[in-house]
Length: 308
Image (cartoon, rainbow, N blue to C red; front, side, top):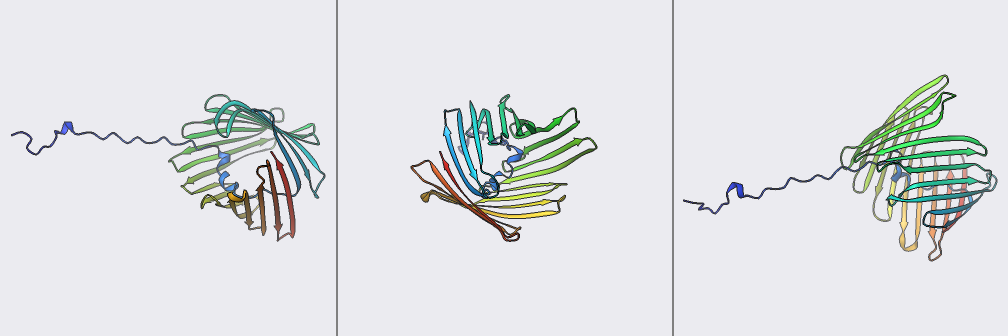
């Protein structure tokens, strides 16, 4: 009788292609878990500071900083940075060499090298005049959806002392990241290890992060209300010092006025705020900050001018 209903044969029906799942993103570095929340809080300011930035070429730039304070002697810092040609992202360029030296001859320097497409290394050195204080070596491997890092701090084969830190982060979903940190230290007559577990959940407008271990806990919450307003809440507990701190910070951007305002309030009865104002068309940024500790009755303020 034929196909009187006009239906196509089963073999002729179009098949739906299986839905292709997007690969999980790389979770980034362990040290950047709380970065969004910390960027909301204002940086401490005290005294008067003048910063002059100068770009010498597409790879090299320097900065001169003069700081005068009532709490100490005036200081001068020379900052130099070199960036290579290999750019993985807008914020990652390899190799990178950064150095900062003050008027007393103390040096802070770090070198970042890309050994392979997924493997990067970093070396950090810190001196106080002619004496080495810190030497640190990092190796980080970034997979498609995980990051593994190993750090050696102040290794001394003769004195049999070392600090070793291992980090691992794994993206379980597009929003959830879990991982941990293991800190091992050894020196003559002393040896120990501390394990910390970490988790991060990222939504569209907010990010919640938690670190919990035998040494304490660190929790943060970041929320972006709109293009102008950001807030952050941070909680830190230290079991060894028997101390806990709760902080609230906010970040307000006024693009029409070229102004950025940051403020904080914490459980130690401290309040503080920093106001930054750009002066276009001049390459000048002014900053004014004030911080007050009601519990200790301490107040300090700062003013800075950044050119370039």
